[in-house]
Image (cartoon, rainbow over all chains, first blue to last red; front, side, top):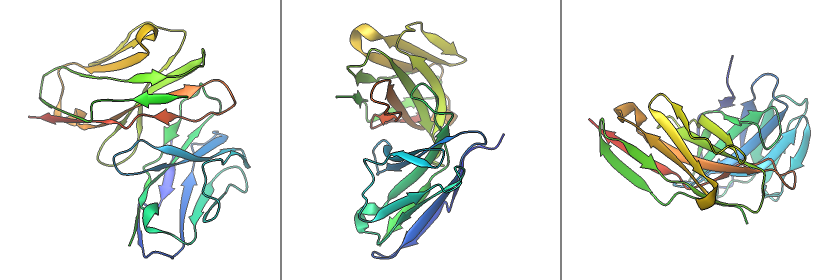
Length: 114
Length: 116
């Protein structure tokens, strides 16, 4: 069974440029999560989707970040415009939903903003 | 408030040594789950174990074992006879049952280096 797929793996951009990350969850997983991991820290949740609905976006900086999961399968996370402080690893995870279920993570996208 | 503390920032051992990674958590929930993940240099978080708050039995899987003690709010991870391939950052995480949060609260991780 295929795991969580993310692309690109690496991205280098200049500040004020836009950037987008894509995630395809494990087949059958209706819940999708985007986390951000700063250097030397654990991941922190940005947004959680149940099917196509964003049910928890309280930690998403909405002035510059946006996300979508139009058909309830794959998802895109966008930053516009990027700032230096956005340099981090962006991780996507999926599960069958619920706090008791295991979240499975993709390889992440490592973003460097210059 | 919920919190996970991994006080050991980095541990170095020589191959075949046993090593224990500490994890202490804080929660007001009575129903919660604890997890351990491994993050090798490639960056992907690899799931290792899940334990619910009502099951305090220790678990062993090959060279890995976990000790869950509610009395001290700890969920420690031991690798027996460590190998170079165990070198990675290990994260402990908490998932609470209240408030429909369904998110993992991670510690800051412990970097384990196993030298040949």
